[in-house]
Length: 400
Image (cartoon, rainbow, N blue to C red):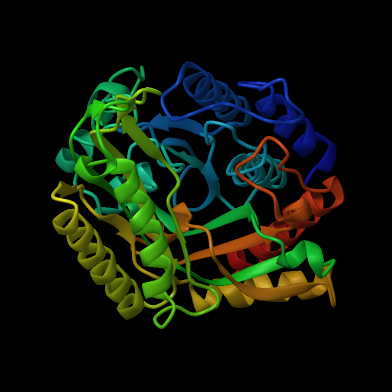
């Protein structure tokens, strides 16, 4: 199976132009947006061109199906609001090139997928979570984005969706190639990371309800200022986590919505996201307990209401040992002394798919560890190396 690096890079750049931000190589292609749907239409046309059968399931997961039992390769093509050109897209275009090369070589059978809403406009890796059965469809349909649109309304904007989900048993395994989205490979001047496991993640929305009032006439001692509640929470949670967390544990308040969000009004409502990640379930549970206790304590002290949205997330997930070994052998052959085994601190669709079939992941470096930003990039030589390592691994897997 001979891959074509020039064709592979050309397709990556062609996809990048759908939703191009105009800032560097950045892309704006949120799930179910016009640009996201256009990218999936482009992908389906590519599938047909190389002899795969396009299949878009009820929630927008977009497959290119080979005949018979096949290995599934892919990732996602939706982006963050200010997204990079390789996050997810790399794995999908790797799959496209490998499927084409396999067709030209007479095998092995390779199918390709772009999962929907991996980036979490509505949930956490929403499309693959629904396919894997970890997120019920009726629950997903009630999820809303930052503007109040429901997942149901969003998915109904996608044309040509099938009525049924694919049976995962038509696939023999899943491999996701991805940029690392961290600094470790870049700093070590290494080319390939074989993922051993993916950390667990919890994500929820918390809302403080206080009292909206005039910013000039309301004395400080009478205020029920919900931003001050958030400020206290941020300080206290950092202190209270110190004896619980380990160096690889991370937590983030990434989105804040103040109401009415005006200069001269004491905010009466503050809605914010809280996300935490770790490789140990017990530690994730302990962190959640601390979060809830801290929020309740602040709400009581400041005479406020508090509500918690649903806690979404995925458990820490180990990758398949056999597929890891195949990827490791291929990496050692192609990139001797320049590869490593590593944990993924980012969440990926592979975590969901691992409950359905043997699953593995392959990383290539992110320049300066930057991702979820228009500046995201990877040297083309590293992109090609990832493609070649994956091709060698799949050939070995197909010959077993």
